[in-house]
Length: 312
Image (cartoon, rainbow, N blue to C red):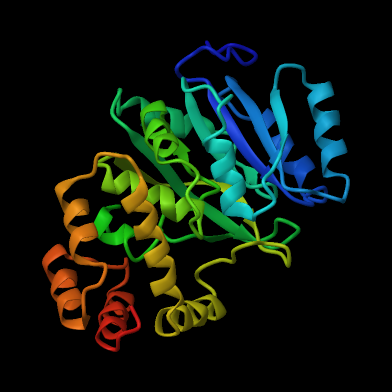
């Protein structure tokens, strides 16, 4: 039987890292979904990035109403979502023991979300491991039943170079994976979840993708990122690819990977050695030899075309 409250010392204690910014309209439902988790051994670490809408007062009230649940409410770095989550993940006061689960401010978790993550990470033992899962895409009022993608190919460095398939609002790390992320430090990368996928894959960590649906993901005007299945999102991805934006993101990720004082797999070492500065022909050969791909054949073909055109 699980304890009725957080233990803070158990290896299966979950530190929920919540980044907030003007989320007062959405936070009550998310906080209630934390309280409804079947895995009861958790505490909440919050970094608020300068809210002006009553978010801080709401969080303080929640902490007062649920003693022991809120470890701290920090002032974020004020540099956007990625920097805010990396600030939390690398904060010196965050315990290195236990499990870390990232959380958006406007989702609603299914009651078994943490339990599924903990059970999967338990199977990895002491090896570094990250877990992510699927979600339901809803409108602002939580109406909607469209599920996110069930990726056909397994997570890998070959995919992580050109695509992120680990949605940050589901990402959960064991202690060994968190140590890798903290050793790399708060790098200036465009997306913390994509960076986590790339870094952990390059370091040889296990990446587990769960096809189960574990939360409701609101789509509203204040979302940082939108649902990937929408036609407008697909068009944005094509523009990012052929407009050079994906190339710029990849370069920032690879520069961060080169700086990270983390042991890398031979495949990752080759990628860092051969990709930067390579011409179109050399990059096309590297794509083929390493099997670099996106999850869709069409989008993989687009990567090849963009490389051939000098846009990646």
